[in-house]
Image 1 (cartoon, rainbow, N blue to C red):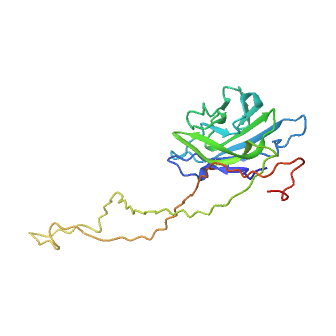
Image 2: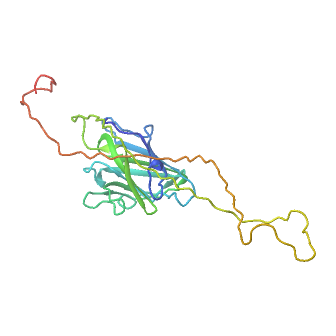
Length: 260
């Protein structure tokens, strides 16, 4: 299996409105490596981890950018269970396959589109898809739509292209990301209340008032504060053109190290 993640968390991705949902590949309910005569099956648990605040958005729908050769005919069945209640799935309507020529109009992503919404505050969705043929297990992009925000930053294990004849590797790229943060102080004065201190003093005749005329009383308040500022960093990697060095061809099985 190519290197990929079994769980991702979109609540950590900065956005004008958060789309606070986690996606987890449920290996217990999946059949990632089917035997002869079996179908491949992927099951995902999607959970809302947000709050009922305007800065968090409910999930409108999501897209798994599976291998481009996956078509609607490859899907034997799909299941959606929301908050413990099974929902009716109609292939081609609320579970569809968007192509590169006809991607999801809101996220711009091709792949398996699951057109079911979910509550940001504690909502749970189990999504399972059963396929007629087995695909390689690898990283597939998860595109999410919530409110007016579309995100496509994170990848999870899913039906990717390739097979046992391919080779995979992991490359580490060290990158230092620097971002300036400006802290601007604000002070809000609350409603002023007045309390009389003792009884009023009445002086016969015209008495001279103490102090300076038409002057304000001034004083200064200082308060020590601790600012806890969460900062999340992310990056995308895009592969360039592949280059091939051809060695000599020969009969027989591969014997790495004997030819170059």
